Image (cartoon, rainbow, N blue to C red; front, side, top):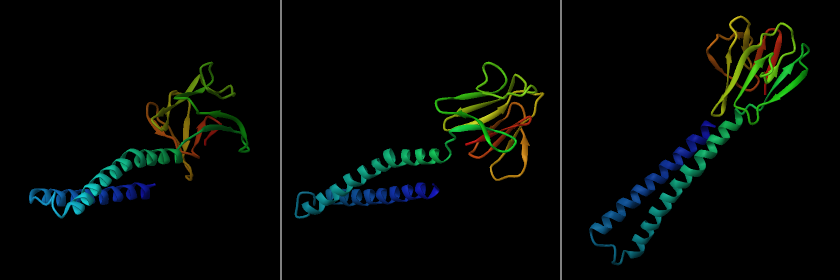
Length: 181
């Protein structure tokens, strides 16, 4: 992904250099009165180069950069949260499509409802900000943890702080585990 952004930046810089060179040559020829002389074809070529450079830069800015942002967002796009059993078997799935927040707990307003008696009414909330999902611990009395993908340790979430979720992170709520996919 960084390679794509670097590639677009290099191509934009080269096109900008072409534009500046062609514009300087065109201005020089115009200043010295060569515009309507024998150099007409040469100046026409320079004018076409200027127009081509401007159009190419606009295409890169308005087409390639949003595509880069979309591609970058697609690789980090979290689509669902899966409730796992003790044997790592999916018990329930919760889709994130069309949602901006989800409440984890045991209440009527909870989107992710955990079926144990030990669960408080509200544990944590998962919020979407732009293209990223964040988890925030709501309950002070119950434990909520986050295990990052590829790490060994479960981090205890502090109330009031937001933690960015990534694919394959595991959320621990008491004895329940939620896998971020």
